[in-house]
Image (cartoon, rainbow, N blue to C red):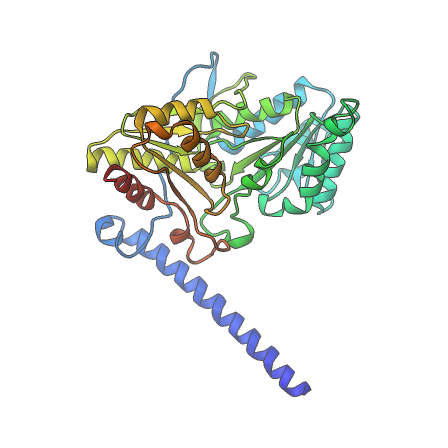
Length: 391
């Protein structure tokens, strides 16, 4: 019996090694085909999915003052520095934030503000959230970092049952509006199932929280400062692939972007495309492709804020175009796109020329090797737009 068990263990180990090797080889072959056949996109399109996307810089110049070129992690770092300078009671804490964090968003802040204001925590997300709630109740501005959104679930009870409900439970006697949670989310090209998830929909079901997701550097800084000064607990999901990809002319002064307001990134009259975070750039690519291939103009809406979300702007755009496509990285079933579909079809039914479409991740754990096939890339989104135009 013992010998058989040992054989099973050895077989399992061998199978795991073989699987890992095949996974690496598949990834390298895919990457090689993308690098060495970059001039043959029309041929490759039939065989592989492209994981690259074009970043569309934020050209909105509605914030006066000097600007500086920053990528998204630099803009977040700049926003955190301004918050600590402005509020002497503000503190930053989380796993490895003292040396700058995995993505360098807190780089040099401990050196500048000291170990009492920027410090590490144990590897315990529930403890990080609970500690932040306690600080916020006592009047401290608590800025917590959960290292990856995939690991925010141990903190779910603290955020959903404590932070979001404390003001209501205590009849207004206590509240933790001074709590802000930052966490990297979304696909990055090689993260696998534990470093690629987009869990915003789980928290969007919770009255009392505010949830935002920026699409770039300029937006990230403004939303972060709004979250920090917002009288309700906030979660900012930060698409990790944008940390270094997203480069904008970012105002160097303190500024805020209103939570709960969507933004029309590009105007159009044929189809409304709704997304948030990285997906906005995919939809802008789709809008270009639709104009080129089908001769139709798409209106691209960046939701910006998940909770609350701007129903007025989205519905106004839906009534204008009569067709709506919603895209997000999270799985289809119970994704936040379903909530948008519901409201649009309730409020805009008589204005719609076709059923609202969703293009999302599939209902399966986030894959590693097959990530390009999982993501709602521009080809899947383009197909949805073509179908809805031909409905």
